Image 1 (cartoon, rainbow over the protein chains, first blue to last red):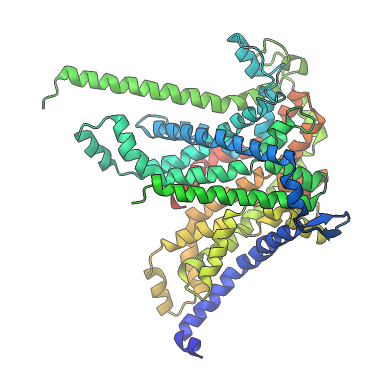
Image 2: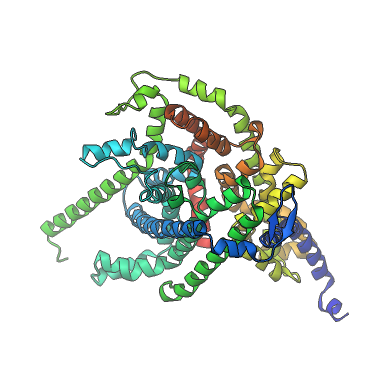
Amino acid sequence: MTKDLKYSKLDKSRFKWGYIMVAPTMLGLLILNLWPLMQSFWLSLNKNLGFNNYKYIGSDNYIKMFSDSTIWQAIGNTLVFTIITVPLAVFISLILASLVNSKIKGKGIYRTIYFLPMVVAPAAIAMVWKWMFNADYGIINYLLGTLGIDPVRWLTNPSTALLSVSIVAIWGQLGYRMIILMAGLNSIPNSYYEAAQIDGASAIKQFRHITLPLVSPTLFFVVITGFMNAIKQFDIVYMMIEDVNPALQHAQTILYLYFEEAFVKNNKGYASAIVMFTFVIIMIITGIQFVLQKKWVHYE
Amino acid sequence: MKNSPTLKKKGFTYREIGKIVVHTLLIIGAISMIFPFIWMILTSLKTFGEATRIPPTILPSEWMVENYTKVLNVLPFTQLYINTILMMLGRVIFAVVTCSMAGYAFARIKFPGSKIMFGLILAQMMVPGQVFTIPQYLLVADLGMLNTIFALIFPGLISCFGVFLLRQFYLSLPNELEEAAIIDGCNDWKIFTRIMFPLTKASVSALTIFTAIWAYKDLMWPIIVNISMDKMTLSAGLATLNGQYVTDYPVIMAGTVLSMWPILILYVIFQRQFVEGIAMTGTKG
């Protein structure tokens, strides 16, 4: 009764519309996300017996997973991929963003070109790079050959396969990060730089003491989304590394393995354990990022 | 005015040198961005023999349009375009409608439970989508909807990112807009449809672009749910090419070019909206 008195007739009419307007989304969230999340967890405790029959096996999938060297190798690959791609992509895009943002002609053209790979499907991107990385006829080995460098078996050599995939990933995402960082740089008031110039601060000092702290929230956004996406890497590896590739073990990512287990080998229970574990890894890394941000991200 | 003309002159040339350095770096970068696309097109027009010749030729000596007819015989491109467009359209329409309504409600109405519900939306954005993939697949399979356009649209029926994006925008609109309308006796539905929604063009077009691009780029979901060739998307179709034409790169490149041109043309036409949409998410998120 007290609740009824708290809200006016107008409030109640507004509440009604509020519920109606969020209903489709909440219903969708329930069917598409909440229920599947619980089901994923449940499946990870089950074994697929075929024809949609599942048997509860408790933590067996997890025990099997933790003692499976293939999984650890895939996690290792994913982390190496992340550690190569995220810092490099963020660093290069920050430089590109600063360069494009400096008072030069043709800003729009550069922006358009750098962003180009972002709109193309990774499947298509992977195809072209696979061709360019071809050990015998690829343009990259040919160009290296003219510099006197021996041909590299980019995609089939276990020590370079992951690196090759990382190069493609970095190339593909520079434009996206650059555009977001440009927006961040643009929001820094010009007056800060004018004041610094009057004080005679060098360009490097200006970058360190004005640009970097003021762009740090944007940088944080770029880093955190970068980590999340890198750990979820699937497409490029799937397209560039076939399952007969001798370097597969050294290049397959955790989600590639998940895909294989779930939809090729039909071990949906085991695959669910893998994806739940990936989820935990992402949560831990994101959590660490949020703690660390206090040290370097400056909010006004 | 202590600056002597010579110093001024010197400063000017420094700036000029700086500009040359900046342009040089940016042009090198731009070439490495665009080169793979050019190489793709050039290879797609070469014979197999010419593509594997060392040293490589730049322009094809014989223009092999046949590579395109070959790949058109392997993949039903018209059908792939239609499927991809239907998937993109479906996901965009559902996302725009559900996200606009929810974004408005979360931003402008303080109803009991709204905070918890919005918390769920934010939490969902932290979970990698693949956690939902197997159960979503089983659901679609149970509904008997594998190999349909519905299956392609299914995971895009709602978008938590979109709700978040549009809520941010609805929050930024002034209170006066709805106060006057409420006094006039308008309910929230009217305020939303007549006053507020028309103001969200920029955010809605950003959401449209994102949803469409993500749908077009999606690979794992389409290759799982639709394995019959006539219900595939461009990305999935391309993936099958990878297995069939392992070495015939000119034909593969022809397929890649065919899968890309519609989105590239759209991008060139709407590139300002693309770029602004991306920038919006980075700064407002």
